[in-house]
Amino acid sequence: MLRAAGWMTGSHLLAQTFAYGSLILLARWLTPTSFGTLAVGTAIVYVAVLFVDHGTLGGLIVRQSLTRTDLLRAFRRCLLTACALAAAMATTAGIVVTHFASGGDAAAVAALALCLPLHALSVVPTALLQKAMRFRTLAGLNAAANTGSAMIAVLLAAGGAGVWALVARQLVLFAVLAAATPVWGRRELRDPTSVCSPGRDRTPGGERWFFLFGVALMVTANLDFLTIGATSDAHLVGLYALAFTIAMAPSTHISEQVGRVLFAAAALQPDNNRQRTELSVRLMSMLFVPLLPVAVLAAPMVLPAVLGAQWEPMVVPFQVLLIVGVGHAVVNCIGETLSGNGHIAFRAKVMMIRCAATLLLLLVLVPADGIRGAAFAQLLVFLAYAGVYVGAGARRAGTSPRALAAQLRPVAAALLVQVGVGTAAWLMLTGTGVASSAAAPWAAIIGLISCLPVLYRLGLRGLLR
Image (cartoon, rainbow, N blue to C red):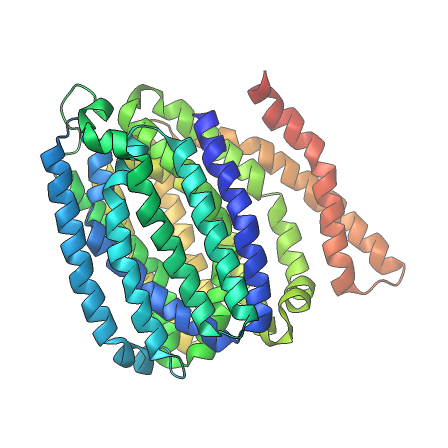
């Protein structure tokens, strides 16, 4: 499992280096309004993607038996749904922009509808590649798609394409996966029985619950953009969208990749779920929690300097959302095990409650405090969500709250050392005349370095034996 997770995470890190490098360049060349237009358009795309999938990907992975007829039926359903939704999205693009991205480009939103039929082409082969545990192949395909789309977007933006550079980035990403996954998954497509295992399906009606979970997750992830857009304009949506994209990277770009491995492993090898879940929680917490203070304290200096002064209003939302992103990176390790071991119904119900709670808080906090209110709404909902997963979710994943707490002890001890040393360093720096705002990031870095031996001694050394 570690090797598979390593391939998924390592290749994704390489791809995201290009992706986020290009994002910095695009943010300097394009306006927040362009990013706001894209955020609203992609929000609709990714919600529609769930209706295209309709639980197909997760359902195929957990099914114990498959035939070519099953695959053809799933493919036709996905493609027909995608074409219908793409036509509807393109037709209503003007209305969407008027209500949720005032000042944005309706044609750009309409063009993004092409992502839907492209996605439909990749659903079945992607599910089979995951079911076959071919994560090295998936990692390479995702890396190629992300890297290629980022490079094309930068070239177009440099040529003055404006918001269309961002549109091209999304279209190329979906197109590469649509073309490549059927080619690399042709063996499984020809003989789906090669990736099946004996036994009865553990999740009757699983596709329905996977679909409900996916829709609730995607709606929750995009409620912020739509609520902000409904009360302001595309400029403010763009500021929040970039903050959200960067801050959620630990969850969406790292933990999600590890989660794919956990999901497939839980479905195919359920006997080791406890060990896998606890190990992944420990690794995710050790990887991200010590970096959190550094990123939060450095944000006020680094973000405006790198992205430009026009992005300064996103700093506070970014700091709050980063806490949420790191938290979700850890909690997701429990959730993916639940998806694979037959408890997707529980996960879907929790996600639907989270969606409703997020909407209620956004409707209260966004009118009161704009994009900062949206960020705090996400934080408040996450705290309750994490409590449910660490309690009821942990037991269903085969572990317990006490066992998970034991996995967090190394990072808790390291964090205490980090805070203590960092505070002492900050006092010394400010005592020598360094401005408080300038001293804080350097003190956090010193604290981070000081905690590394503790992390190794208490957390990593035992795993490496």
